[in-house]
Length: 137
Length: 318
Ligand code: SF4
Ligand code: SF4
Ligand code: SF4
Ligand code: FES
Figure 1 (tube, rainbow over the protein chains, first blue to last red):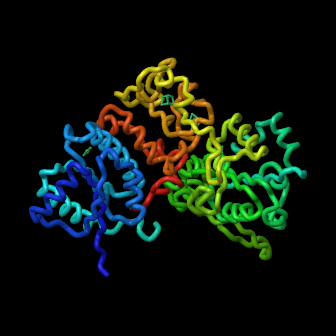
Figure 2 (cartoon, each protein chain N blue to C red):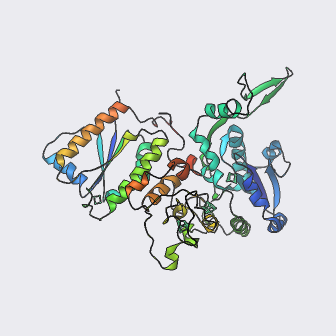
Figure 3 (tube, rainbow over the protein chains, first blue to last red):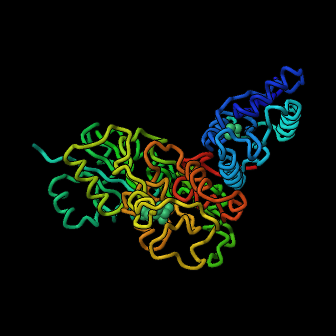
């Protein structure tokens, strides 16, 4: 069977998750390879979550949070970006292609942007091919 | 009652953990009187592998293994000891999490052999001879060497009952651990033998212990940049101290000597992946995300003692 990417999208309940909802009600289409996990805030996303997804064979992990100034818990997204940048630098040095993990701010009113971001992410991961950790590397 | 039997094995380690036990000196005399050392290879006692293999299963009360599992011999003896010992302990951060020697996982075996036997400045090896796992001497004696593998923490090859952090474990910690062992006052199996506090919680530089708030760091410094204050928090001053996520059984020895904690104590309770948690915790203590880009060489900092037990365990070929 041809390889189809498996993408994990960890979405903040207050913004990106609402954006995904909006994309649905406005009938914007985005790839079925996307699997959304809802979290209360992007600040809830520990590097362990991203690692666990990759370890279990996800081909890409996308984190969606509120724009700066919009985080429901004030500074969750500021925390998220600091952690994410440091994690991404470390994983890149360890041979994981940086494009496999992404962080973006998508609000509840950006249904179109959500659909576009998912389409771009799916295309990027198809270009990279399967997660090299698959098959116990 | 007969004395408890003790076995000690140095796998892929440096011998420093052996010294940490020997360092107990006077205290060790009590320990030595209290226990019967049936195996201590390859450093202290002359007992052959075949003698160990001949001991009945479950006949040794406590086995300590230091060093990571780096070749087929380590793996074999670890499995033998698991069968012979009632309680098996990963002693020191190499056995518990891979240790500093686990950084070999940043390279392939080929790269490492090439560096060690061919490409070093002082090496003269024009035929590029590398160690072989078997060779025949005088046409009749077959000699073998173990096969190298990626470094693994002990619990990847056998079930481990207790973990003790440190590179090597601090004197007071070893003493407390032996006392706990000999008196049978042990935590539930699978746990670390630790006082359960982070380095920060026992650090004389911690502002919170002095009733002051903890501030974000506003710059990134290497240890060679300037000098830290007398008693301020190193992390607040920009030095990359891993005290917040590291077990403090050493009594916060490095910050007391103006050196940031590098994490040899192992993860504080509740943390499975030390390196990822360290990344998360240190990143959150900096004032803004631009500072994150200035942290030099994150892998050698956050994975220094724990690469084989932290995601992704080794460098992937990309
Ligand atoms: S933990 Fe440190 S002292 Fe112990 S064997 Fe490993 S490198 Fe040596
Ligand atoms: S971060 Fe380091 S210097 Fe600061 S309180 Fe913790 S252990 Fe001490
Ligand atoms: S301060 Fe940190 S690096 Fe230093 S001995 Fe203690 S745990 Fe190890
Ligand atoms: S609530 Fe959306 S990022 Fe914090």
